Length: 163
Image 1 (cartoon, rainbow, N blue to C red):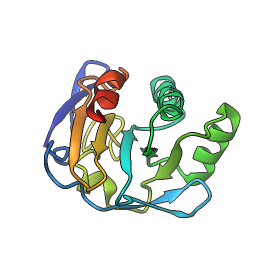
Image 2 (cartoon, rainbow, N blue to C red):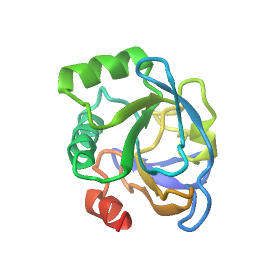
Image 3 (cartoon, one colour):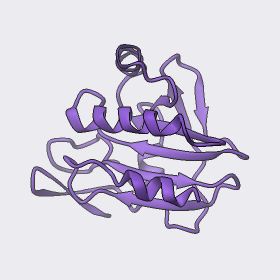
Image 4 (cartoon, one colour):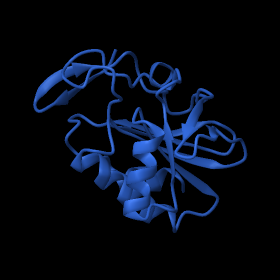
């Protein structure tokens, strides 16, 4: 278990993020159009993981990673939450999110596999705020579980990990 915080109150996750240098777990998520979203080999991937697009900090991180994705060569940004694909499609359409992929973990083991499902607190069963950067060969280049869910991730560190 790892610890983050929600409003200053410690909350636990189901496990630990994949360590830098390890192989990222494979996953199958549901895209906002209900297509499968998987960890594609041969492409660098930034996983922006968060509780819900319907919170201010989460929506800010999706907008920021969408902006950053426009300038990242050979890199796919995947925004992951347990929001239903309908909500993700609504948000992305309203916000003009077109450089990043929205993917739902609502019927996936992603949260357990990546150690980010919250096991207590008022956001229990949602995903913690985290970022995982994966290289073309599936190697984890960067992982960050934010210390406070109400804060944005370290965007610079994520982009720097891509080289």
